[in-house]
Image 1: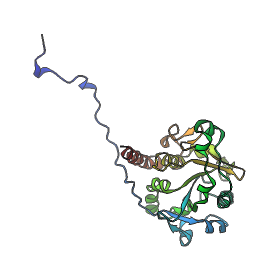
Image 2: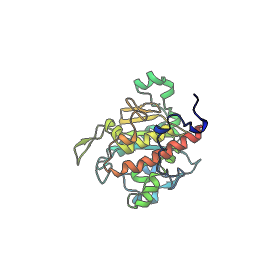
Image 3: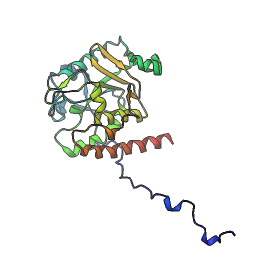
Image 4: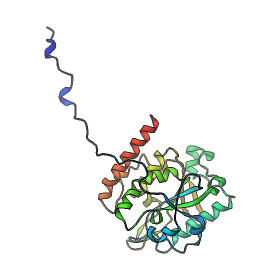
Length: 265
């Protein structure tokens, strides 16, 4: 006998989970200016200084000013990212090479096999168009927590507007902890993974260039370094020096994903 219509119930109604309530995602509009350092001032530096001290030399980047080199890295000290100038000297070497407009950055052999040599090559002319540096210690406030938070929520826009994405990670150690801070450790850090993800989700995705020394500068393709691409190395499972940063960046990741989905649609 057929069940009376009023007695019918939706199939599987008892096991349907309630909708998940996600935290509100921050807006991805730039909330803090993109401060960059002109290459001439960079080449004259003897050491990196914090944003507040560098402010007179920094300029707010606007479209049409010239391309930006975005540098991602791990700090070599708790209070200073580059106590002995190792990163500064390598970045300065890279900028001098870029100005010569003579040498391409070729792909790592694994990236060439995966994408093709021409697709991962960064041309000398593309590098020559860069005129400014974005580097967190210089570009992001270090002594104003509110301004710093706004800059963190703006990282997606900084990466998007940059022309080159370079990971500076040589065979160096943090002298305070005696821990290595090479490219493998760069891939383990939550903030570095966030920047890598921002590049991968950017409408203007860029090759990930790894600078380990003056003699070792290679392109790895847009997805990240081999074995640790953005889709196999999520931000939430990375290492954080401050545990609460994991939740803070979770909201930023959510906003980036929502923005990228909207663009795709």
